[in-house]
Image (cartoon, rainbow, N blue to C red; front, side, top):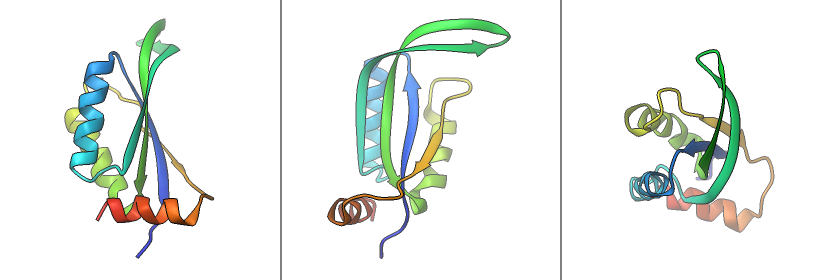
Length: 106
């Protein structure tokens, strides 16, 4: 049975940590696929200061059933005090890809 699919965004401070985290998500069937974008520049406010840093972005493909367990995994394993966890619904996509995504998480 197919369920709604999501793209979750997060960042890390280095590629090794990001790669390990991504590997664990796929192994634990919290994500069907994770893309690692090795360098993004982030400018943000943290503890009332403007910060700027190089980060690694993960694009995590998951579904509604896995979304809450994924967020719990973030709270336990993500190294940031307040990690980015933005879940965007995938409103359209190739039906065979979305079926594969859901099948990968069972």
